[in-house]
Every structure is written in C-alpha cells, then in structure tokens.
Image (spheres, rainbow over the protein chains, first blue to last red):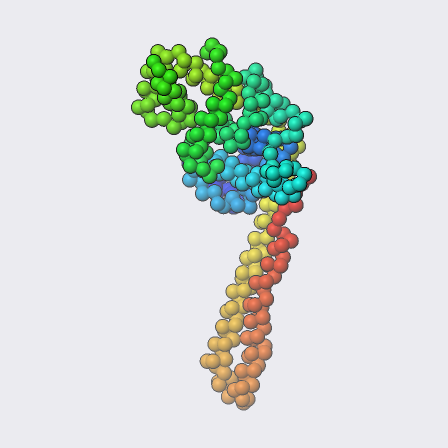
Length: 185
Length: 162
C-alpha cells in the first residue's frame, strides 16, 4: 500500500498525466458518490468533480504519500464543494433562500438522487430518509460504510475531531435505523 | 435487564460499527449479544442500514469522464510547457546578476589599468563601463523577473468545459 501511495505522490509531484488518468479511472465513481452524499443533489456534481481533478493536478505536490490517497482526495473535493456553495450563496442571496443559507438539495419537484439510484429494496426504503438527513451525517455514513475510512481518516477529511465524527455516525445510523426496526434478522 | 443496560450495549454496537470500540468492550458486547434479543435486533437493523447504503448505484456519464481527462491533459500540457520558460527566465536573471557584479568588479580592479593602456581618464572608463555593461545588465536584472509574472496570468488557469 505504502509503495502505491508513494507512486501516486511521485506522479502528482511530476504532474504525470498517466498517473492522473489512472486515478480518474479508479476514483471517479467514488468521488461522484461522495459528492452526491455531501450535497444531496446530482446536478452540481459533474462540475465539482472536474474542479477536483484540476485541483489535484495543480496542488498534487501537497500529497505526501504517507497516508492513503482517498482521504486526501475527498478533502480536496470537500473544499471545492464548500467553495462552490459559498460562491452560489453570494450570487443568489435573494433568490435561493430568505435566510441566506443554501440548501444543497434539489428543488422539491425533482426526484432525489437517492431515489433515482436505489437498486435494492433496502436502498429504496432509505432513499427518502437520506434526502432529509443533514449533509454532515450523510457524509460521515458514506465515508465510514462505503469508503471504509477509519474515524481518524474521516476526521482528516471533514476537519472535525474524531469524537464529533463518531457522534455523526451514531446519529446518522439512529435516523435511518427505524426503517428496519421490528423486522426479523 | 433494565433499559439503561440495553442502551449501554446499543451504544457499544454503534461504537463497534463506527470502528471506535476497544477489543475488551467488543468482547463484552459479543457475550451480551449471545443472550439479548433486543440488542440483536438493534444490531440487525443497523446492519440493514449499512447494507442498504450499498444498494445505491449512481450513474456516471462516460462522456463526462472523457471531458475531464481531456481537460486534465490540456492543463498538464500548459503547466509542462510553462516549466522550461520559467527555467529560461531564471537563467537569464542569474546571468544578469553575474554580469552586473562582473562590470563593477572590472571597474574597481582594472579601471586604472584600462585608463593607462588606452591613455584616457579613469572617469571615462567608468562611464563607458556603466553605459555599455553595468546599466544594461542591471536593466535586464530588474525587468526580466516581471515578464514571467505578466505572462503567467494568461497561462495559469485552464478554461472550464461546459
């Protein structure tokens, strides 16, 4: 693993396009999924994914290769997403929200990205609750249970203490669990 | 068994799923789960949430992937083509520093000798060195660092694809 991350770090430092292309192929879907969980909408994601890879190219030398690549990549994507949200908030203060907060969920008449992406019965049951769940809880859940990151790695991605990350996971699970309570195992 | 007791074990289940439990507490949880139906149900519901989260498949437009790759290649090309230019600016700046210092050194060390060889006044030697050596190299030294800064604005950022 260490040698893989070193190779990635070396490639990014050189601005090696071949390394970048391999990373895009490997991580594109996971990046898309992470951003959908973070934003609760699909329509902003493609732009942000592209911004993320350009940022990886420009600032790749800041990845040292000592830790896994995924947390660093998600951290970059998160910064891009938050910058974009801030920018859109500035542009649409009067039209988007009365209180100046951007709600990163699609308009009410659009189907949620989770409803569209649900492929199993369990996922269909979760889709609505996921849409109404606070983004930070969704983010913690996807990073822990889909990306299999440790609490320390998630803490690095979100810039919050490990204890905060843990309680976000507990609360996220607590919100979604009632969908399956009272069923036989 | 009271409710608080279950809550404590259910919190341990959350900790275990989050990867935040010690081996000792994990062992105690396992033992409890062997005999407690409500906590088993709690674990089962939690596991179904986790399995459910894996049941989403988001569509990724393959043409978008191609556009991202094309955009990366263009940006990388620009970054790479800007590198030799930067190296050239650096070399020219170093040469200008050397020339400026060299001119001053020649003036100080050999000014009198040159004046006597060509039978002219020392002041004339100084003026000649200043006009044809020191000042031009000083100009190069001062102006060249500004040129890459001016050209950087045009090459730095890749345009966004629609």
